Image 1: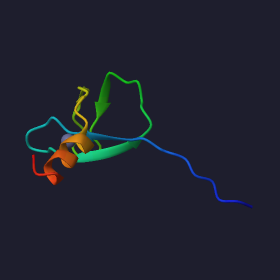
Image 2 (image 1 turned 45 degrees about the vertical axis):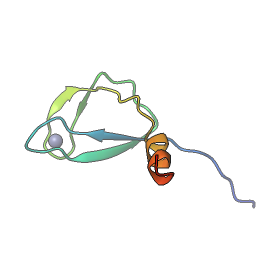
Image 3 (image 1 turned 135 degrees about the vertical axis):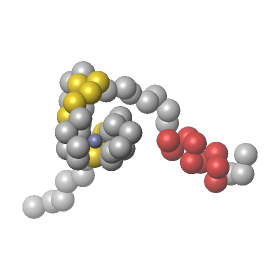
Image 4 (image 1 turned 90 degrees about the horizontal axis):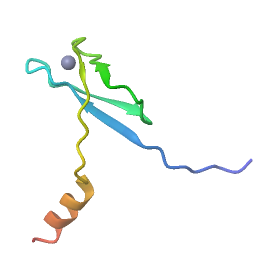
Length: 64
Ligand SMILES: [Zn+2]
């Protein structure tokens, strides 16, 4: 049986609690407005960051 390939988006969440600031990953989006941090249990709203991290990295690599 052949191998299969697919792209899976991983969403990285970062806790907003100052004392925690831990990160965790979730595969595919959950359309939740609020999430609970698995590290400290802080239950808070989600803010999406629209910045493309790859663009930033490539620019740095080209020395601009
Ligand atoms: Zn936390």
